[in-house]
Amino acid sequence: MSKETSGNHSVSGPTRRLVVQSAATLLSLPFVAKTTRAGAQETLRGSGEVVVFSYGGSFTEGVRRAVYEPFTKATGIKVVDVVADLAEPQVKAMHQAGRVDWDIAYIEAEAYPAMHQAGMFAPIDYSLWDQEALEGTPPHTRLKDAVVGLAPAIVLAYDQRLFPGACPQDWADFWDVRKFPGPRGLDTLFGKHAIQFALLAAGVAHKDIWPLTDDKLDRAFAKLNEIKPYIAKWWSAGGEAPQLMINKECYSRRIPWPLDCCGPPGRTDQICLGGSLRHLHLYDGSEGRPQYD
Image: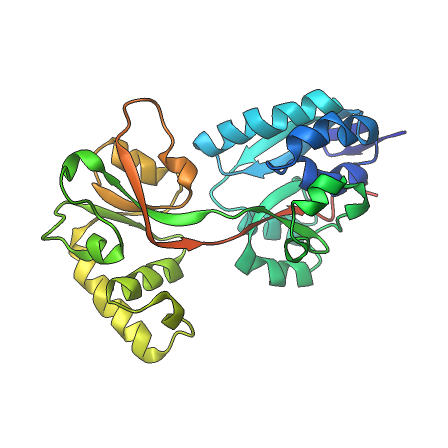
């Protein structure tokens, strides 16, 4: 048993490295119920806290109830969530400054290779995982210093009250302002997504989008120019998308996570899966926390 401190954060009992190496499993939704009741109580019982990045809003509220609170109950270790739209810029800045304040963060899959090469993540000890957790996580999702924590889809959402008959079904319908009139919303977080949606709206099949060529880019930008006058908001934060719908500022828009559609009774948001894009978020434990080893 030991006590380690990191800035204002400490873990008493198991070492911080052990906690973070295990947390990729313990903070993963599919495994938290069984793992926290069994392995966590035996292996990670202690005190103190770990700092975990989250996206905020209903996402963090749900994860806090389903994951963090059971983890704390099983281990005695408090989970402190910090909220931002993206983790990557802050993780990079902390490593460049030599002061790493987060233990675990969600990292977009496309950002992982360069950050991995830079040594920003701590290795995961999969020997701490129970058999059910191992079997439930395909080998290709278990990397040396990261594990797939989320596999959400980017989907099209709309207010069903505005379309009592036929409803939008895909990105071609999103672009069809005559059949489905009203203001739209698209994001500025990931430009490649808008390019893909534009190509789908132009009739390009999923399998033919990649690799992007100059001709395809020209076609995508021409399509984006068509829809541009009808975009009421180019949003830059995940929480903006559902709020635009609630405020009736946008009748249809792209949302980043299915959880954004979950709200109080009476909400009339609907989603369609035509043209949805699945992407991965990785759980990564930060390397470089003071007195980490």
